[in-house]
Length: 368
Image (cartoon, rainbow, N blue to C red; front, side, top):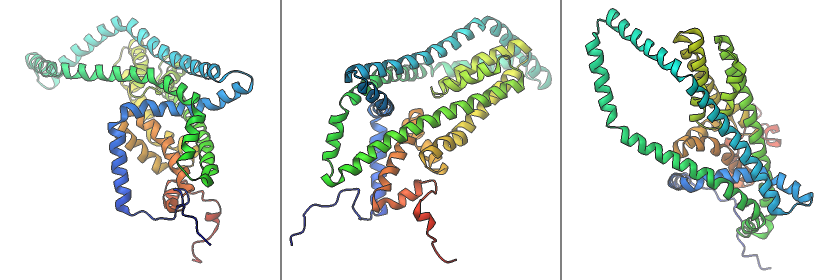
């Protein structure tokens, strides 16, 4: 009897990889991801969006709409939602500018009081303070060009991402069958069902990821609101949930959303301690969101343990910045799906999992 010459595919192989081979793969993948982030970041967001919109497009096609029209409507709805968030951000900034005149007067008064305090309590003369401020401004002036250049690069990169993400998403949705067939061709025919299962479960994992993110925004909004209410800031739930929604825009969103409650608290109470309290509240909630709420809410839905989620968030931030902190979580869930079906990666599957090993967990390791 002649044995088949086909080699087992990657999901059936029992080959064990050495530590050196795993380290080589990690280093190579990290270099590719870091230097190719200009392409991979918008493509990854587009893949995420296409997975989310796929069920909607399929439902609309089932109702008789053409593929192109269904994709256009789906992308349009997401674009309008994104535009609403940007409008909310712009409205926050506009409201802050309206209060700028009052804030400038109060800021000048605060600086004057601080200067007198330093002069009386610490014997720092006004001349020394003026010299110190002048030297600081002259030193920072030499860095203005580099700051402006980095800012311009960040803005242009963000605009590029905003333009390319809907285009990539539409193309991925339109050519989804072609891409699926090409993926099937990379593996033996007997593994087609396995690949199909992974694709379906990947879409399901992304759906769970979005549900987890919505839960994160709800919890963060409540914590922000409660903190502002304790301080005594007017309209705490409005400011708290606006800040929660705008945290979708990493770093910039939370800073812009904090400007208005800071301004309102300063004008209302005529004290610098209330704006500082607002900053403390938002900072504490952001730390809780990054290292406790987000890993717990998202990781539990993706069935990935919290330790791995925190490590992945940090690694994603190192490689891709704020975008990596968001995207690397669902990427890890896909790796876990593959590891669950690969005998040689069972250790990785256990390491990434949340401890729910099904039948394996029911079997005692030892009699002790």
